[in-house]
Structures are given as C-alpha cells and as structure tokens.
Length: 135
Image (tube, rainbow, N blue to C red):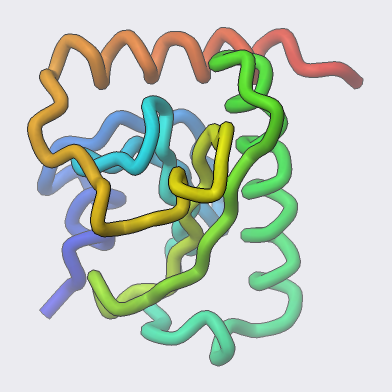
C-alpha cells in the first residue's frame, strides 16, 4: 500500500508543491511549525532516511538547502530550520521551515488549523522566492 506521501506525489491526494524533479518533491505541510513549513520527500518509498542511497540523500539535502534559502527570503527569517524526525509517515522526509527562535522547532506547537487560503499564499511566496533565487 502506498504511503501518504506517495499518494500526494502521485496526485491521488492534493499537495501544494514548491519543487518537483525526477528524484524528490517538496510540498507544504498542512500542520506547520511556522508559515511556509515544507516537506522535502524523495520519490522512492524508503521509511528511514538512514536507508536512502547516498546519492539520493545528498539530493534531498541539496533540495532542502535550496528550499531553506527560499524560505528565509520569502518570510524574512534569520534561519531555516531543518528536522528529520521520521515518525509521522513511514516515508523518509525532511522538515524545512522558517525559524526565528528555538521554540519554532517544537512539534508540540504545530498549527493544524491553517486555512487553505493561507497555505496557498505561502506556496506562492515560496515559489516567487525560488524563482528569484541567486545563480
């Protein structure tokens, strides 16, 4: 049975994508730590990030870095947070989000009630920041 993320990647469930390529995708989470919280997910269904092939792991991290830089620009944040937790969905993924303080990393503070309009607006901000990225 495909994971929740595979179903999003395949278009069976909706997703607000900000990155897609042949090896990985990035889409906004519906329960963000901060506005713009994005998940970077390999297309391959691998449960634990430590089991990813080294080249795929490197690619996921490169995409995460690109997304993190865009999030900092889009939300005027001093840092981009990065967390690999892996307990929510059995499909390796990286949480990347704008961060202003250490409490932004507290998963007990996620917001499960973000409106579709706010998520759509955040997606547009991230896409614009990616389009304007240096080099």
